[in-house]
Image (cartoon, rainbow over all chains, first blue to last red; front, side):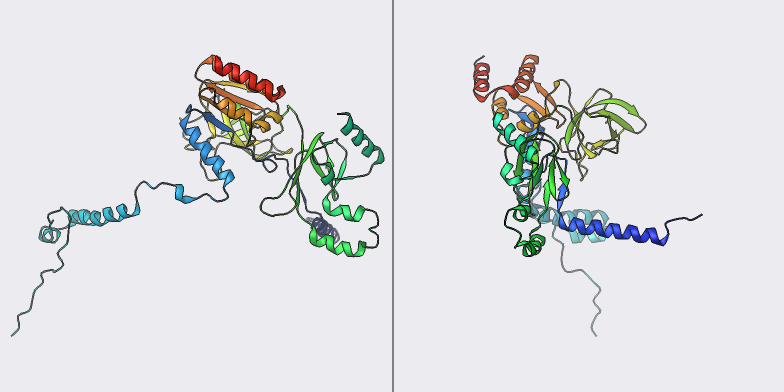
Length: 131
Length: 273
C-alpha cells in the first residue's frame, strides 16, 4: 500500500499549479460578493433628534472614519493634561515616600507655607573632627 | 424600456462581447460577456499588425479589476449573472482597475462576509446561539462574541441582534459576531426593547444607506427616532409613541415606489399634523 502520491503525480500537480499561477499573472480579476467595496454606505445604526445619544456619537465616529483616511488623534480629548499629570506625580512621590519614612527622616519632608513638600537637600552626616 | 431590451437582444443574437465601458449605466442580462478596457484594443479591427507589440504592452498595463455582485470571472472577461444596471467605481487610492458590479433588485438575502445584519435569536444550543438572518440556514453566534461577555450579559431567545458575518460562503454555515476585530462593540449587540422590525427589499436598504439619501434626511427632521438597517433587508425603528413608529415604518416601506414629489407631499402633510 502506498501512502502519499508517487513522484509522477507529484510532478503533474506541480506543473498544474505553475500553470494556474502563470494564468493568474495575466488576468487580475478578483471576485467579491460584497457591496461594501462597491458603494460607500453609511453606518447602519442611526438616531435623530437626540433619541439615543450613544448611537448619535457612534454615527459621528463611524461616518467620520469612513470619510477621512486617517483618524486624527487630536480630536481625542485627554481627561488629564500632560502638565497636570507631571505636577501631580511630583507631589505624589513625596506623599507616598512619607508613608515609608521613619521618624528620623520626617525632617526631610518638612512642608513649607504652600503645603508643597520640598525635601531638604543637605543630609546630616557624621563629620570627622579635624585634628 | 424597449430600447435597452432591443440592444441587449441584438448583442445576444450577434454573440459578440461588448466593452464594459460602453455599457455603464445600461441594463445587462445574465449570460452577457463584457470586455475589460485593456482587451478592447486587441479585439478591434486592424489590430493584427500591432498584436506582437500590444502583447507586451498588455502585460504591463494589466490592472487589478474587482468584479462585484452580479458578475463573475470567465477567462479574461466578465460574465453577467444577474439582470440590472452595470455600475463602475474608479479606484480611490490608485490600486488599479476599479470595481464593476450589477445594481440588481432582490428580496432574498444571501449571507456575505462583512455585512452588518439584524438577526433574531431562535435557539440556544451548547455554546452558541442560532440566529435567523433570512438566509438559507440560521447563523451561529458564540456566547463570547459580545463586548464584556459575562454569564448575565447574554441575549435571550427572541431578542434582536445587530452583528456582522465573519464566515459566509456557500460551503459552510454562516457565523456572526457582535464585536469588531479590536474587540469593541461599535454599536453591535442586542438591540433594545420595543420598536418594530419589518422587511424591505435589499435594493431599498442600499438606497437608504447611500451618503446623500434625501429620504433619511427628511425623516430625521420629523421627530426623535432611532433606526437600525440590516443588509439582509430588515429595518428596526423606534419612536416615542406607537403611532409615530407605525408612521415611520409605513413611510420607509412605501418610499421605494414613490417619486420624490409624492414623498415631499407626504412629508409636508405629516409636518403639519
